[in-house]
Structure formats: structure tokens, C-alpha cells
Amino acid sequence: MSGAGISAAQLDSIEQAADWFSLFASGDAVAADREAWQRWLDASPHNGWAWQQAERLQQRLRGMPGDFSGRVFGLAREDRRSSRRTVLKGMLLALGTGALGLGGYREFEQGALFADYHSTIGERLPVTLADGSQLLLNTRSALDVAYAGGQCRVTLRSGEVLVNAQAGSRLSVATRQGDVRALGGRFSVRQLDALSQVEVFSGQVQVQPRSALGVTTLGQGQACLFSSIEVASTRALDYAADAWSRGLLIANDQRLADFLADLARYHPGLLRCDPQVADLRLSGTFELDDPDQTFRALASALPVHVERRTRFWITVVPA
Image (tube, rainbow, N blue to C red; front, side, top):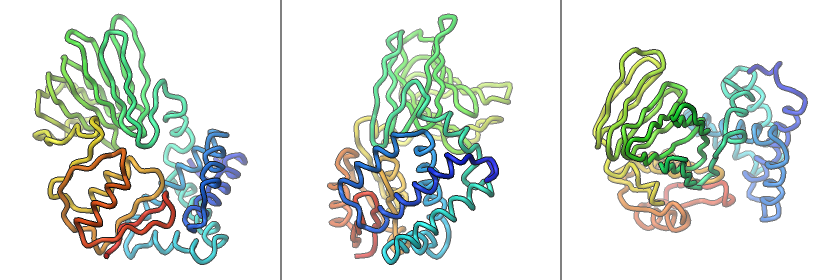
């Protein structure tokens, strides 16, 4: 999507998103602001899309050298109007060059808002299918369910789903890269940016990349990534891969930056890791529904401090 393709309503929403983003970054937001922001977010699909662009911009800036994102959004502490202009300029530039707008509003329309089922940030949503098979949507996931000819086709629009298929179930999960057909058992499918991930906890599945002729069969304890043309890699399943379904996040000698990236999937707002502590190692079991306890545990186990500008803007920095 190019800047020329952005409607007036979308531009208005982008400007409003920049205002809200800068308010949260400033540390001045109060509970009433959060409630007003939620009302704004729910008021229009354009608003939801614009907020998604602001979050994506922050995620992309995190990967830039020299803590570029910190300098950009940190302006809010000095001058919220300046920060708002900076955020707005960055969003429009990224949309205009396609960095954020790849698929643009059409992609947003294909996401959670119009899905048969969708989960919010931090939510795990159970769904029971007509044949008794069970689905569990992970955080911020969306999917459609369709029945035809005695078959059930689950289309995963975004996020991750855990499937517990009934014996004899004719169930498949479609992603942007291809299809995963259940041969009974329990497995998960996750939609990544350019790949799909499959993890098999019991039973078997068949993986069919969209543009490939052959299929790959995975059994219990196996996982893979696949593109639209091939199964890119097959590996042994991580023992804690389905911990999220029990409300847990398990780290086993994991880099702090990687752990916080996993945790950020379940945390509303911005969760950043200072590069100085990114390589610290962490082990432990943490409850996804109690982030405050997780942050206290981090500060107790590692030489770090959890810096809160707002409850939606958190940075883990050296102690």
C-alpha cells in the first residue's frame, strides 16, 4: 500500500494514533486516558489499523542500531508535541515506502476484526468444533472455520492455534504458506511473517506447502517450518512448546532479549530490552496471567531494573 492509497479517514486515524502513542510514551497517561483510548480503538476499523501501524513501527525500530527507537519515542518525555510529529512522520514515511504498508489496510481487513474467532492480547480462547475437536487460540490470533463435504477447514489468519483433533476427524488448518492436515492427535500451527510453524504433540499431521507436489508427514515430538514451496526445516519438539496453553512461559537458559520478545506477545503496549542486558541468561517458569510477578522475578534473578514509563511502556535496563 502506498501513501497515495491512504484515504482521508485513514490519515485522520493515523494522526490520532500518533497522539495516543505519544501520550503513553510520555508517562503522563492515567486510567481515564486508557479507557478513552480503548473507546477510540473500538470506534472504527481505521483506528485499529492505525494503531497496528504504530505498534509495527516500534517493533521495526527496535531492530535498528544505536537504540534508535529509544531516541525517537523518548522525545515524548521532553515534548509530547515533538514526539507526536516524529511518530506521525515515521508512520507516514513507512507506509509510503511500503515498510509497514505491505498489504496495508487490506491485510488488516483480513485479520482479527472480520475473523470467525479472534483472541485479544494475552487471551487464550477455546473453541469446540462440530465433530468435537478442540481449538485453543493463542494470544492475538484469528481464524475462520468452514465445513464442506464432511470436512472442516480452519483458516489461520494470524497468530497460533492448538488443535486437539478427534480420531477420524477430517480437519485441516490452512495458512498463507499451505495446509496442515490432521491425522488425529494434538498439534499447533503458527503463522509467522513469511513461514508457517507446525508442532506435533501427539498423533500425526501432513504438511502440504501451497506450491509443492509432495507432502511431509510429522509424528509425535516433531516440529517444522515451511514456506509455500518447501518444508524448510524439521526438528525435535521443544519440551515446553505448548506451555502457553497452560498459561505458562518457560525459559531454559534463554537470552533475556529473546524471553522478553516471547513475553511481549502477551503484553499490551511496548516491552523493550536494553541492549546492555540483552545477552543475560534466564531459566524459570513464569505465569502469563501475572506479568507483574514475572517482572519482579526478573529483577530478583538478574542484575536488571524494570523501568515503567506507563503500564503500557516498559523497558528492562541494567540495575
